[in-house]
Amino acid sequence: MSLRVLFVIPYFAPAWGYGGPARLAFDYARELVKRGHQVTVYASDTLDQKSRIRKKHDFLDGVEIFYLPNLSNFLAWRKIFLPLEFPKLLAETIKNFNVVHCFDFRTYQNIWVHRYALKNKKPYVVSVLGQTGWGIGVRMPIKRIYDFFWGKKILQNASLVFAQNDHEKEDLENFGIKKEKIALLPLALDFSEFKIPPKRGTFRQKYKIKKEDFLILFIGRIHYLKGIDFLIKALPKIKKKIKNVKLAVVGRDDGYLETLKKLVEEKALKDSVIFTGPIYEKERIYAYRDADVFTITPRHYEETSLASLEAAACGIPMIVNQKCQVPYLNQYKAGVELSAESAESISMAMADVIAQKGEMGKMAKKMVREKFALEVVTNKLEEIYHEVISR
Image 1: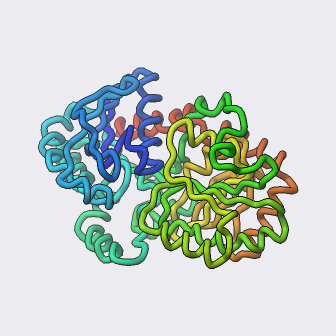
Image 2: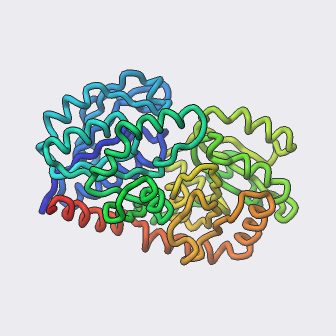
Image 3: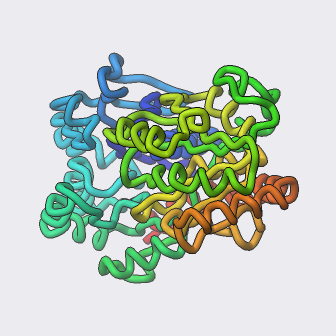
């Protein structure tokens, strides 16, 4: 049966600066369209820190998208999305869809999805994408207030809530969501982008990284919570075990870049650390292709990193910590999961990767192809949509 699916997400293609959710939602949407379903997206018009998407209505790969104007693009870049036209549009159109899929958790849009889905008896599902925790800092009380008034109700009244891995499933249960309302759905990756990898050397040549250098790659927001400083602090220890080490930090500055640059100077690592700024589309694949290992060690639970799966698809082993779990990683022996973020444990993990790099890289690629390929995950997503609709 052909379905009419509504995606609700604060940001959408081509707003790649907002990270993995935009890409994930776009990949799901175009794969569902390929299968004969109709997918409509209600997103805000934010593009990046300074720009908005000019078109208010567009089609990308058969996916219909409505870009609703944010009250403030300045606030949107700080994760406060307020597309004020959204409630009216949703109220007028929600009856046209079989199911609503919400991406992200604590959003203005989800408050209205909850209200109008219940009012019109429409099923909705939520991909929380690692956002159930309260975190630290000034956002913590705001998240608590949101959850008191709306958050728990949004998840408890959803037909299903998606967890990326076992930790997120446990987190949702602790949040008060019944086990039967939680479905494990790993992140999906469009493997077609990585089937024919580009020639090695493009990224290294651009940033003057030698062929014989051991390249550690991080891709993501440059933020305190990402734990990039753990890697920088571990570099002196790593350099004692591995010669010619370079760390490439790729991503947009989220207020932490100057702190990291000072740390690099303090540790006398100016020749070993490269800050490239953000890179997207094909250029990011050049970075994966030239890396020897992909590493991410966040301070907060971020669940699975889409960038780690993209690296794996290029045959690059990964080093992650327990706050960034990749399902099947240990089963496939596709990398190393750290038990701690100490300099010693990171340097030992790097040595393990060097010793088994060829085999780990091969198994990383196999893991992505068998467990995270877009076609495989979308099969499960389709089944879930049909299930919640039939209820």
